[in-house]
Amino acid sequence: MGIKLDMMGIVVKNMKEALDFYRALGLEIPESANGDMHVEVVQSGFRLAFDSQQMIKDIYGSWEEPVGHRIELAFLCDSREAVDELYNKIKQNGYSGYREPWDAFWGQRYAIVADPDGNLISLFA
Image 1 (cartoon, rainbow, N blue to C red):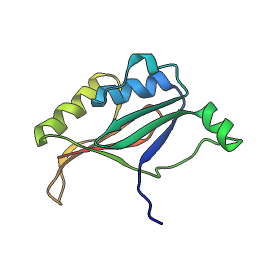
Image 2: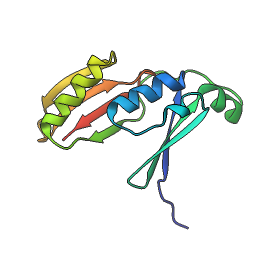
Image 3: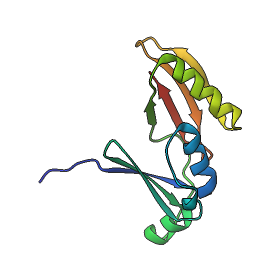
């Protein structure tokens, strides 16, 4: 029996705030999804899902706010300049930068931002 990673889910406190952040990153998400309890975005055959805390509480039977960084989402940008531009766009939209763009020792241009739920999101080229 084989398996295939098909979807990654993010639990969010406020769906609209979370979706607005990921729209600012460049994901195409319809505004009509703002009030949904579950939203999926498909990119290159992979699904990124957003689930409200209430939905997860209903599925799991409970919900406890997690502490600490556990999983990284990393978005490939078109160029080194695009990393800087996207980082600045995120900051200009009022979101938190976690680490300003830098040239990493492994050769990539890299930056880290935080989504409204505190998840660290890497941008690289």
